[in-house]
Image (cartoon, rainbow, N blue to C red; front, side, top):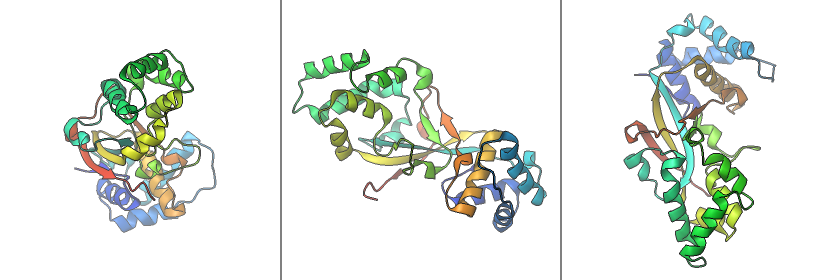
Length: 252
């Protein structure tokens, strides 16, 4: 079975070549031959690149067959083995556990009663991050889990949240309560990228995969047009769909 795999440019090229039933070198040559000068997102231009490369390969776009897609979920967690046991849980299924785990980091300076009161205050919107916290928690449709098509999109980028440094929900809590919670969390947890599989691939994702390859081959970066995300909308990724858990060296 062939999965669209943007773990690296080599993996993406191999998956496209397998889906098109063409040699990897032929796919790379066709992508390198297609050059662009436009920078604004235009749907017809975004579609034109893949269409031209498929034409050069003498392959119809509809004949590039993928069984599914690999996505990459970046986070920082206390126990990285939980993904193999439980999969990737949406926010609503892990929020109580998260609060309990965070309390262990500050139990030396905050009583259990004070912590429960602090949680109630933040859930009412108090503190610097309370508003953002309240935007995320009430609706299951905003509980994720979320993931990127390209692994590189989890590496630090200007203007983007770095999920390997601190998850947004933890940052919201830390900003609201102080207590040096963010630093304590980072000192105790492990950054990781979880690779998982899904079934099916739509045209937008296929095009994003093409632009990932194009950006990496031409510029060494994935580029904006390769941005394609997974949204679980409150549904967990089952453990059997977890392919790998990559521990990231936080010192790099």
